[in-house]
Length: 254
Image (cartoon, rainbow, N blue to C red; front, side):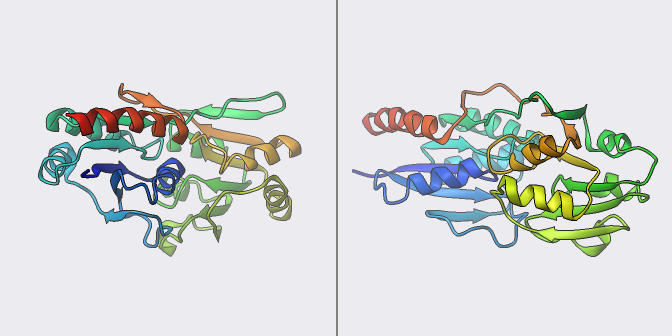
């Protein structure tokens, strides 16, 4: 039987987990698409596609020309435009689509969160007084913090940004999660961090810094999740696999 062609729009741990879960499953011909922001992504099973599609129209054209049977949007929780493009393209091409949307982090007793709506608001919320800041918003989104140069930033990113993209007073740590509580607490203490700035990406891989902040009673400036377009969605890779089972049977019998 001809395998079902599956395109996974990646950029999250769930995308990688799904690709691994489908490795060796002859029922699927899997392509994992990455935007190309990471120069050296982790090696994963399946065919790797790097780069953009040219908006919703470009993605719809790829779905049609490559005869993709199923589409899964497993992009980063803050990739709003890509999520909208996926919905529009799947609808235009007549391809069934599922979104994997991991739950946001929820404030717990002992947390000292300051909720903000944007990175610009996060930079402002640090305050005028110079502080030591642990910044984990991603290497592509440092511009607001260059405009608050009085602070000293510990910037953690999977890949190093260009030096001119960093705030004037910054130390760079390149690392890829998941991270554990012991190491995160040691990092915060060693660097004498006074406040953490992060986006509410959710998931277990980066949650240890929040546990460490709670243990040390440190404030966390948390950028809230953006509003996302409506789509058929699940929260976990396990649930995505169940959806694929049903969709595979339907596609194969069509």
